[in-house]
Amino acid sequence: MATLIERITNLGINHDTPFHLRNKLRVFNTAVVIIICISAFYGGVAVVKHFYYGIAVTAFSVLYNICALLMVRKRHYHVAFHCTMWYGFIFLSAFSILFGRVNNSYYYFLFMPVVCNILFDQHRHTVLYLVTSSIFMVLNVYYIEHYTPYYTLSEWMTYLSYPNIVFAAILVYMGVRLFKQENLRYAGQIEEQKKVLEEKNHEITDSINYARKIQNALIPSEQEFAAHFREAFILFKPKDIVSGDFYWITRKGNKVFYATSDCTGHGVPGGFMTMLGISFLDEIINEKNITRPDLVLNALRERIIHTLKQTGTAGENKDGMDIVLCCLDTSTLQLEFACANNSLFVLRGGALTEYRADKQPCGFYHENLPFTYHQVTLQPGDQVYTFSDGFADQFGGPKGKKFKYKQLQETLIANGTKSLHEQHKVLDHVFESWRDTLEQIDDVLLIGIKV
Image 1: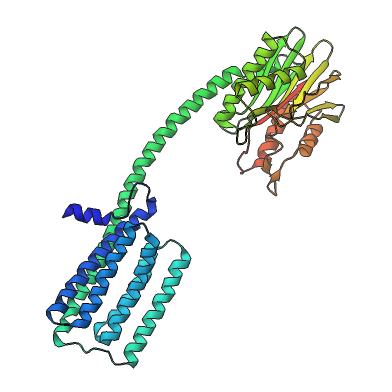
Image 2 (image 1 turned 60 degrees about the horizontal axis):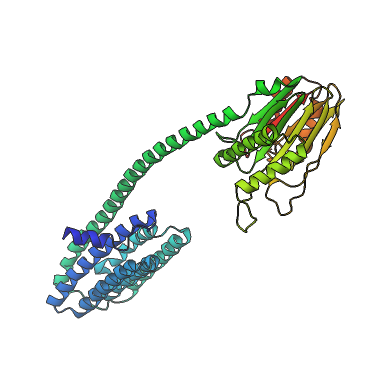
């Protein structure tokens, strides 16, 4: 018996049934079974007393509720819910028409708004049935007050009002109790899932933190970087634990090579790309001795496309990086560089010059052209700025808009007379003030050097 009840209660519920719907279905199925039992009881009484109208009404109730269970079994949940609401309106109205005020069935319309709130999530459905229930109740009361009931109750029928009260109390009690039990069950499941998620999150976070240690071991410290220049600063603000932006530096005699790169994505995917970028730059410059920046980027692009097996197929990820690669001869102050998507600024005597980048990434592109070779002779005191797009693209300010490159240029010019150490603090403050309470949308990397 317990197994049968469990099967009926869980009718229409399987592994892919939405979480919130399972609760409703168990309450609905239980209520339908109770109504079938109540209807069968009154049907039996009607048969014994040869009360044919009662037999017809209770037979309709039993047959409809069996159909409701079949609809649920076929997963026509919402059809069953809507039909049940109208079954209630018709069933209660039938009793008012047949027996008038003595039956008091119109009071049960007060339960219909509760039922519709349990069965339906959309506000328009609950409002619709609230209005409909109110209209039916008013019509029932009007009919009772202005028309003679179709059937006059026999003396024995008056006693049925007592089991009516009991059955109504049982139905409400069982519905509320089952709903409460379902909520407690889900609360327990949620608590267990919360613990599992916390453990998984802790494991994942530990793994990502370890990945950050590996990434930090590959990326030079700011002190190591600055040791190659008269002055230098690095404003490096990863969005997540692991960064998709990276910087890199190496020295060959009097020439210092350094890169400012923004890989596709951020977080763990970006972190994988940074490791590829760093290892490829080491291989190309230090092992293959390719030193002209444009040729280095051409070779870097080929290595990325080959390693990631990029063919240009539709739907394929176009992973790569936007990068500025510089080569500074510290003896002659000759600066050679090549730029993929991100430009380079040179500040001299309060005037800022922008050297525009090639509008293509260092990775697969629909038209891979050779990168442009730039050469500039710097003067003592010149300041060179390279960057990713994270600073300029950050939303913030009074209107929640992007910072933009023009404002970045103005900030660099306004603070160009300060030491690079002071500039670092100013730029960090400007960024955080601009962002304020908004989320950081991307990794931020901005490098400044003075020759």
